[in-house]
Length: 266
Image 1: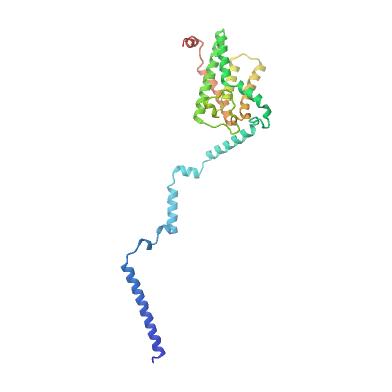
Image 2: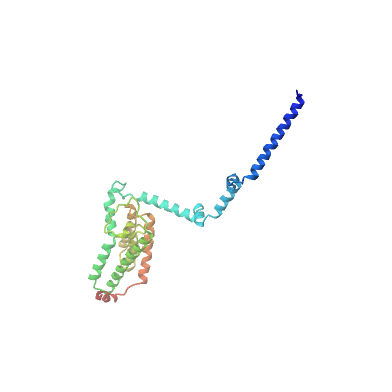
């Protein structure tokens, strides 16, 4: 019967030999079987690689995306002004609906709207030109007709380019509208009011009360566009400025009454 010391030595020797055998078998398996792609550590999963890839993606962002992520001061200012414009236009649209705060004044505002419409002005100007018997009067009326036609053309071109929709509170019940009248920028009534009022104040001999009435008419026409919900505030302001400058264009291309026989022959 073996002694306990001998048994412990034998067990120790056996465990060492077993460990050697397992290590050798593990070594032979690793050398004999090729390394599969799944056994390799994926570099994309490492945090360092993820950090590098994210930084490279940020570096490779196009300039447009960078501008969207970092908006300029000008863009923020324009958006703020647009929001103020829409808010103020909605607040001032007190006659936009019959149930608005000033809805009872809507018929009166629509009469003011017709007084600034282009068709009545063109028809009245053509009639006055036909009935005029003086050369100076024909010259003034002819250039007023030229100014009205120029206003319609320029406003239609700008509306077709900008294509800004009318305010949401607007009702499309306007008098004699055309295809471009579905757009809002600029206000054709405001351009016409500014141009006609400046034309009349410079080329017609008017008394002081009449001159004041002409200026008030231009201001009321412009305000009525916002009160009826037809236009935003910026549409009216730009339209008034545009009409004021159109008069300078009419003065530059001032027509002579000698052109009338040529027009009648055509």
